[in-house]
Length: 278
Image (cartoon, rainbow, N blue to C red; front, side):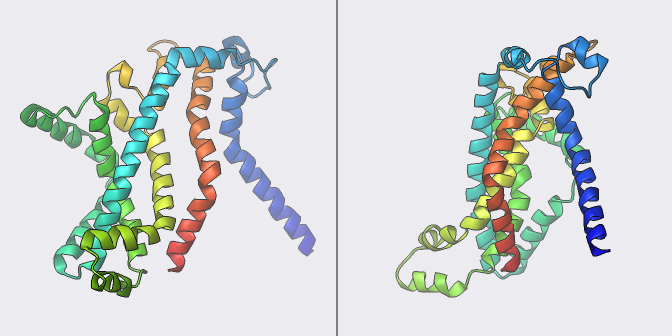
């Protein structure tokens, strides 16, 4: 009886896994088909596995240029988020007064606000900055990086804050007695101890920023600045959609972040696990 239950559970899990993987299967098989073959049967395997449509999709997407834009925006955003969020969380965790608690709770509260409700006010605010301070916030990669930092900082500070509280304050006091400055205490004592949660923060933000479509579509209208997810827009016209090229383009968008996730997923589990235990 126990064996039957075990087999039933495994079959159920297999069905659920196949259900969640089915969109990936549809994208992969249809990225090798022409339009006629795709419309005849979207679930069937392709007649041949030619990479012709991948090459065509790369050319139309200007893939290498878009890849450079995505790498620049993602790497710079994540590095700044890590530095600013870790320092902010450390100061908030070590400052026991009402102001630090209010700032921390305000940051946590912003995590509950959907991005869609902030779209219009954000665009108006960025237009004001551009017009009054003459700082270009639209059609610049740096403007998009600035916005990514703002939207990702709250969850990053939250993750760092819980981890910093688990670090004994006596270590900082000992470093201070030895003559270390506030800046030295953070970079020489605290930041190296934050490595597990830093890896987690980096991976979560890389996946979020790399795959983001909505915010770049609002701020980057120049074709030369498009990121990889934005470049798939080439295949969705007003009257026609090149589904086979779109599928190949989506695979090109997914592959880098899937490789990154597979290589780093054990660090996510390790970082979250250590943070939870502490």
